[in-house]
Length: 468
Ligand code: FAD
Image (cartoon, rainbow, N blue to C red):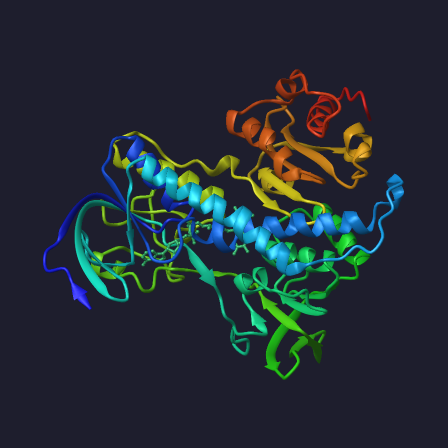
């Protein structure tokens, strides 16, 4: 191993190049800082390489396959539809993931961010080491933004391997399994259940809680469950996964449900029960950074840790583990280091599951608003009354606005249905800007569009719906 015998001085250093780290590095550079970013594995982090982006690529490919099989309703008949899954994977990797991650690398270079390859480890609050397999170099820094992300949790009895997959393994399968058990029906498990069910796999979800997609409103989850049922996906709730026994041709998954021991023989088991922050092998303690019992880094509203020149963002700080949260916190931290008076405000943080149909939520749900003592009402506009949804043959779903009774201020919204992930953006803007239902109702929406259902929901909230 080559060891650099002198320390290289850095101004601002970002550790981890995921949607938290690379955004922080670019924003800090834009604000005039001299920035270096350290990455041990892949530019783009989990999100671009083995998370958000590849999962959405597989979701869209699986929809294409379903459309090819099932379009007789529109007078389109297809014969001999085949699936070359290795080709699907090649497309996902080369045309989607590689293009995006190369693009991010170019953006970093264009913004004059120095890229340092290797694993960072703090010696103290102003010094770190970066190690590769063959070298180690010491750096000093003025400010650091830590954005090291998270990794899948491995549970007892389910050691990750060829048949017991984490999300990365499930995203990179080269064959479509005949059968698969998914332990954990959160959004990652439910999205991947959708992918493989669309591709023809017999999927069973084992969920420890009474319902999948915990955290989303029940009426949205019901739509997803209905679709899963139509596709033959079995959902076993209140189930405790016990052990995976790998055999020659697959794996036996043992679990307990309704007080009985059961088992399923399948090709693969995917375990998506949550993620653990990457804070355990970073030397944060040596730097004096305080952490919670779960290993999350404690930060203030600017992302500053207990050590004033060290910031933390993304999956390693409290809150939902979502890419857009990481990027949002990244900009706040980078601007705070540059002396701007900024602070995080999570009021309008969307949550989206790319299930079938998509479900999305922003701001408060009706029950959350009531818990906070707000006097609100919820108004639901069904996609069945939207012309564009009808023309897309996708009328399952709705737009719901949660508005104050007194002055119709939009404090939250939920969308279920096709493209809910995009429709929620307008409602995020409404929550963020404190708009009321009149502001939306008076906004002219293009016709025919799914977005019109937001306007229709606003009119309904005002008691003057045209299309309901
Ligand atoms: P990460 O993206 O995890 O990046 C951290 C980076 O730090 C990594 O590249 C890692 O190699 C590097 N690193 C770690 N330790 C060190 C070290 N010591 N030295 C140097 N480098 C280090 N979120 C959404 O918002 N929408 C989605 O649709 C979505 N889908 C997902 C699907 C899947 C299958 C998964 C697994 C996740 C998904 N997520 C989604 C979550 C999202 O990927 C994360 O919230 C996001 O990546 C967190 O960003 P981050 O910058 O905090 O960390």
